[in-house]
Image (cartoon, rainbow, N blue to C red):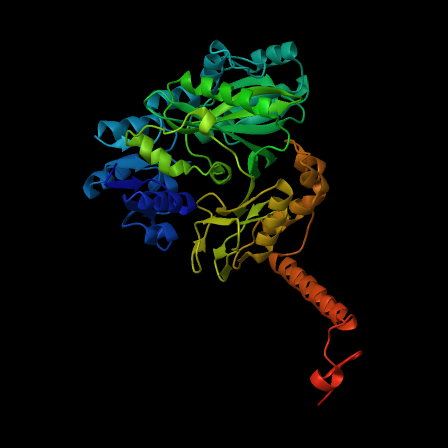
Length: 499
């Protein structure tokens, strides 16, 4: 096991890795930009070093600086978290060339799965089902028009070099193809430095289901079940849960075997996720994320396996102690991404200083947060502040537990996504598990202008107080037959009398 590792990230994922490392007896080195000087991950680590100004290009994306800090502090390995440099093969190679361990897959595996067209080609060769489309990047809009005509509209144009919804356009008809091709290519070039775009058939209203994997360097690759990630906005996930409400045991096994085959096709090592589209009992490989996912806690709660600790253990050379038959699933987990956005105003980002912060607690409630009172929320980074996760014996109980936890949560100083999540928890289709990637399009009322977090909280408190008052009145109106006499206790049929 390592003595010390550096976490090349910020916010809640940096804090999550620090906690996992400390439980393993491993010391941690945090890095931070000037904007993150007071962030919780900085205070939680054994050591912390400023690596530059707020813009990520001058701080968290400076691989040379990160490697230099790791070497100077005696860290033996670097954990990338997610985002930033987590899926940059040149950075992984530079870490290895510096004599350090990268806690994650090899640069070859990242390259193989990072280029979406190359990944599709590999999956086809490995017998993994993929959505119909091209195996290589399109040469121009004319080729896009030709291929779209062959596979039929609607189609989806996607960046070959990245993900996260960047460089992606749905095209409904031929007259849209040229404009969409140019827009997707330009966005991909700006986001990933590569404007290559490929095309695939756009499935109308599938579910987005992903399979969690763990693979060691000793030949063991396991799937840890699925996560339902269908509630999205512009291809960004908002709510995740495990297990899916619709998969049968046979479907879960088949999708798991497919994901394992995909990982083995690139000699994958560490934690990773195979994302799929699922519709009417059929599923298709979408892409592989070669890192830990934002939504990993729901899998941890239903399996009891600490994915982040096992990332570290695998990188240190340990062997997974289970077979596939040993993996068991218990209960249901749901995660809500708590972001500094106004969900009723096109999810515009909100900035400010965190004031009062009241966190939910109680059975089955987990808070993976990267904020604290006094922390400044700006525009330099992703708006996700934290993840609120619950676990319960059944999905219905998990929904009710999440609703209760959201009502307990208070984040003053910025607008948050909490009111939106509360609306979803009460929506009939969500409660019934009727989900697909067009969920928000079908339920636009969830994004209509609504009350503030404080309005929601006050209304909930008022309702709770009213219910308690009614309960007490019912108790007073129906005294038990064993009630003491008025002379002994002051009790009367109509209430209390002065004594």
